[in-house]
Image (cartoon, rainbow, N blue to C red):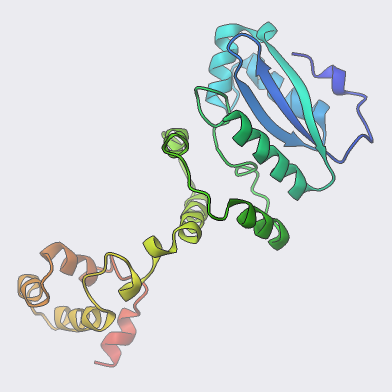
Length: 235
């Protein structure tokens, strides 16, 4: 795979959507960049050194050899948002997030770039996916892609927020949670009574929940949005 064929590629477009193909197993990696030459070197050098961050691509490179891979430009884009949208189209079209078809670790374009997306892009992406449900195959691919990865607190919060936005009924707080057995007023009563020394077994029996639920409330492992200090001050 040669990066130098892109060295003199200038002024064609602000952004490029590209693919790295394995001509042996037909699998594909899809990405986007502003500088094809630099980006290809960013893939090739660590692949040759066997230190590439994409384990799927690295394993295939080790197995089939450099001569089995080729790169190509799939499309062009004028803006970052357009580049990500087109990259997503090619990821979905080729199912490159699925280990059976490709080498993309994540099913979402640009998810590891750390770039804050504009409201306009978020709106377009939301409209594009409204009403769509992930297939079981896609869900499994997402799960497999996340195994073994260590996530920073910020990364974990972004993942949680993304799921919360897609499935608000799961992440609804308090009484609005689909699986809530207690009301917020009951939880406040439990906080006050537990603080006063009433036993957890007695509270569990009184409110019709398990001891574990009472413990979680008492030690702030659930219903965390409730201001416990405020509840105790007003009791």
